[in-house]
Image (cartoon, rainbow, N blue to C red; front, top):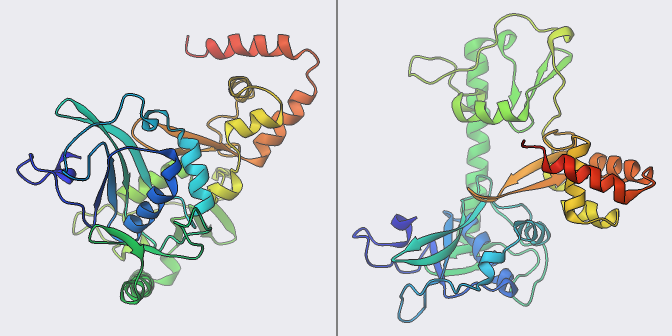
Length: 331
């Protein structure tokens, strides 16, 4: 973090540029401005917005102790991001102490598959259908040359992936190749679909070279995925295939609470009681920073809770029991 906002001597603040922007304060009402910058960063090299730094002169002021930054509800950020952007960006929100003063920051990674497109008009800042791009110290509508470069990059990635796959198939022999969809974790093994759990899939994508890399040998030290033996329906475990989290897991805890006329805390106790957490049929988790995460729930979880609560006659006794159960979960 310090390397990103300071010059190499570690003392002087860097100027605003392609990957950094400063704000003196954080205001939730200015979220559209922050989103514009975040989309621009994501469509270029990624970047970071730092809160608590004055504009002129450029000095570290730090966040006020009553700053709205400390009261950010990550669920709201993701909710509004879903409404305003074509994809949810990979971002991190946190604080850092510099010279005894605390700064807030929102860090955005570069998109692997560009571009992110604005979905709606917002306060004369965001424009529906617009693609924002980071230029030197500015977040603006993308120009023709840069948009063309993004399109050409997409074509190049697709061509390279196709050729790598084609060469690997020829080298190993079509009869010896089974393809894995690294987005869904699905292998089509003859007529039998094999699904890899999402947790294992994420580990494999980090550690193993798949067909998309075009490397199926271990001579260069790269680990390779090899399947040895035969598979049949008796030893295949059915695991939920990865889906679109915005479509298949549309509900937050507060949505479940509102629908059933209960508090957020009571909704948490119900989720715990019916063992819905940690099951991909019912929920998925979005990591928003090193310290926080958001859980979203499926229609199935939503319906299960609504149906079960409709059968409860004495809600007070029911939730008293669930609360004790919930409080004692770690004991």
